[in-house]
View 1 (cartoon, rainbow, N blue to C red):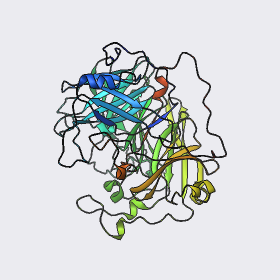
View 2 (view 1 turned 180 degrees about the horizontal axis):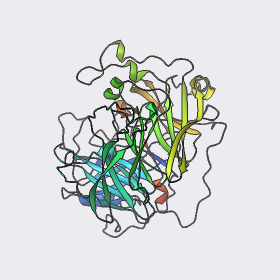
View 3 (view 1 turned 90 degrees about the horizontal axis):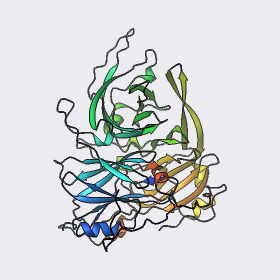
View 4 (view 1 turned 90 degrees about the vertical axis):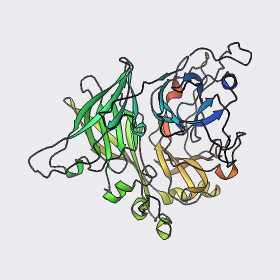
Length: 479
């Protein structure tokens, strides 16, 4: 990326900044509107995370990042060279576009700029953190013969290989006949739409999803919906259905996009829960920590006890009220063990940690902050410590004051916490509206280590102090 000009037109020297080892990115970024392109450039002139980019609409704008250590939340910023549109409701201004973080692997992020008009398509960008950082706009996928001509952005993932990266989404047939044969193994055929920067084009790959005969719990579900996509082990892209399991595509040279399905351990959800899709990432999560895949489950009955009406909205009345958690409710972390059996991998889940929430709630540090005894939500395992879990705690269901906490899963101990503050802009002057400061948009945060790829200072700083046990005596205060 060329030097971003300053207000005077001369290039600014990059500042020496020490970035976090890993961050938790909000999927929805901040749209910051400026009077013109010069004002947008001036706003990021001293930001070494910033990159310039051009959209298909002909706009020149900038990406930048606000990066902080967990358990605080980091953000993607879009600096748009147009003033904020006026709205009939002053507290709800109309933004010309919205930035989103779709996926991440190592020093690479997959970002999009969502359209203001639903008839328009989103622009996809690959952001590579480095010295300097760069952003490449991907070509549009156009193929009317393949389940529509637009990409499913919610099922897009990015995988950084040794000398390249790929971007891919997954298409699983929505309606499949259930074949009841005892002596046959009928695969389900899925489509992958894959982009490679070497060719600069998208291509279609069809692969079977093997059905394992004799293992009913290993059958690929007839109802599948992708909730998230993540890279794994430097060779797999993994599509996750939080009510079913993980579908792994092997993009190594020896196993080009071969598919494998690994169901989750524990309870199985009925079809009405799979169809309703009520916040599936609220109590279940898959993430990667120290190179291993971890699956988190928080004991709850919300998905099965909450009903939906024919308009797919939550019903009013007692069914909508969430019951207090039962005594003995647990948080369980499993680790996916992977064994190479002569070129074919074998996968199995193994319990890593289990804690009883009553032990966490009884701690003086938890009670001193007046945090409610409610189920932690949207859990994710720390990237660099599989015994540390980051969660959201809220006063009420989907509303109220909120905290981001870090829990030691080995000792059921509260390590640190900070009030959750929503940094999204809701007014024309860029101030925060008080009643929205604790609003969480119910999208799981994205853990990523891309910040390690940003330019480091010439003199290396002292090694970061890791979280220690017992818990810190003072919480992290908000910015």
